[in-house]
Image 1 (cartoon, rainbow, N blue to C red):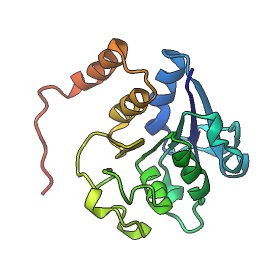
Image 2: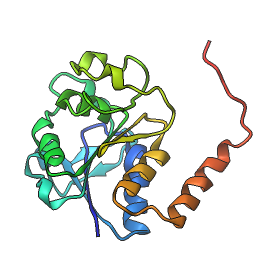
Image 3: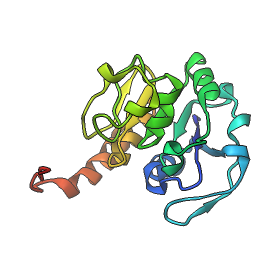
Length: 195
């Protein structure tokens, strides 16, 4: 079974990777594990306290199939964890690398978004990361998957989960049903345009 390691930081956005990990473990029997800076417990935006399985520094890219970076306020703060080494090692090992919301900020800083189509929380959101991939930015509402790299905005946890599970070879009728079930709540809703 595939193994997913999700990186969490203090103030992580609990809703962004919960669907992915719950469906992966609960329905597909994938192994899920969590890492944080120094392996220390972290508390989500919603107040959920998590004791991770390992430190970010102890992640072994050879022992995972997908490395997922959960969003959260820490990634845009001074002193944010530098995950360049583990992300680059995962890419070199041919593993799926994924980031949602501010997790895309962390990925942009590693250089992994410089040469692949990707998305984030809006046009210009990654500009202060020093990345050189602006030409590959896609301003779309759903997750983007390209060359083993998956990105999504904070509002796309369902398509993010779908893309990661698909990359792990787990896409099937059950997953398509699950995604369609979530999509039904938006059927017929009026489109809202920003002023």
